Length: 207
Image (cartoon, rainbow, N blue to C red; front, side):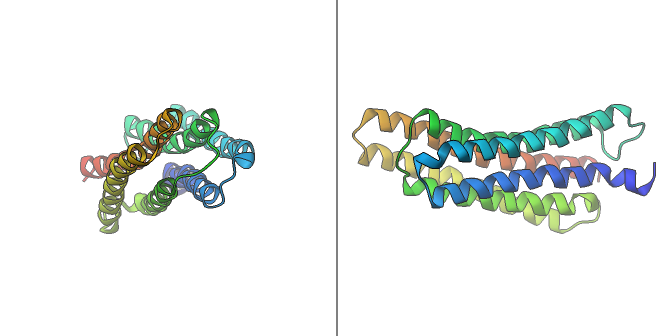
């Protein structure tokens, strides 16, 4: 296996994570200028991102089947690819939840959530860029810790936002809808942390 082939998986992880970043950026921009009329277009664009990420992941799985000696354990490559894909899926799921509940107005807490998710995905980009050097990198651990911190911010926001929802809102339909949306947003943060934790486990296993 040549140097190019050895780098294939690390380069592909960078590509897949770039779609997570694109999805998070789209979510943030959608929330910054939210109108329910534009939501179907945003969902369509988000689905295109998710589909493109799936295509890259499937290509990597096909390559892995033929690979004699991959640079990481096959199980780790498969699980990490699925974990990264889950991030994009969870972000798409937020917009689908808003569409299904016919959300016409955005709560400020949702904008804050979108910014945290975007920051998490920026962190994942840094992890992906550094991952090829995981045996020597001192930076990886710092980025993983930062994503863990952002996920904790998301957890606190979920609790506070849900409390505010029940204190301020009287319409049971809106309470139900936003409870679900907040849950989907929190899941995005969890998905990002899952990727960071999985990378940390791979680093420890191969140290």
